[in-house]
Length: 92
Image 1 (cartoon, one colour):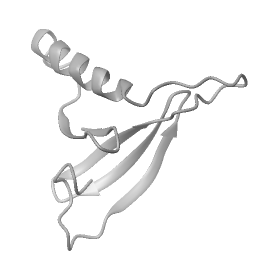
Image 2 (tube, rainbow, N blue to C red; image 1 turned 45 degrees about the vertical axis):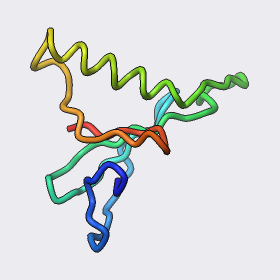
Image 3 (cartoon, helix red, strand yellow; image 1 turned 120 degrees about the vertical axis):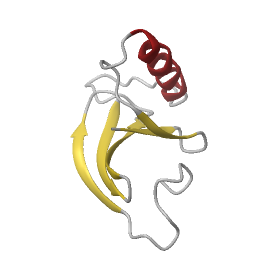
Image 4 (tube, rainbow, N blue to C red; image 1 turned 90 degrees about the vertical axis):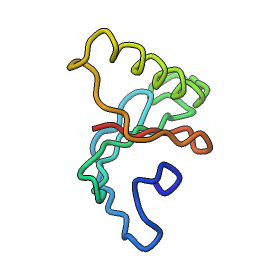
């Protein structure tokens, strides 16, 4: 969250569980800009079989969302930040 400049150094980060899906964990974060959802890709998919997936896929998701937002303005959540190191991103 700090790498995405959504939380100041002195600001206390407030994270809450939102959802755990097949391929990502989504957390609700309270920031100075308001609430955002942070999507963290799981390297091992949450299925009965042992399936691995690269967490770099979050970058492709963000790129797709940016492209789709030009065509469908109200259908895509606003991207508030992307952390290239941790491979997560925040949306409204």
